[in-house]
Image 1: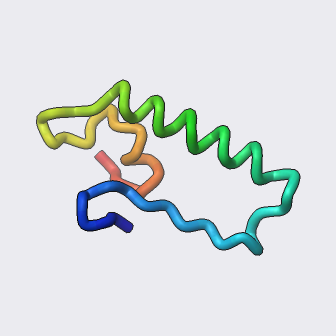
Image 2: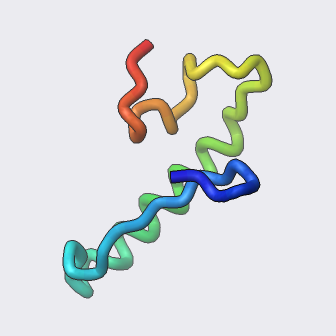
Length: 59
């Protein structure tokens, strides 16, 4: 979902994640965010945007 500022908010219930997986998940999300901010598209096009894969947008 998105907050009022338009930021993507990911919610993952704790019961889906075991303690051993939490660090792996956090590192993956951090890498995704870093990658997405490096590839921001100003045209409003989802082409080449890594977030499109996560939200299921097909181009």
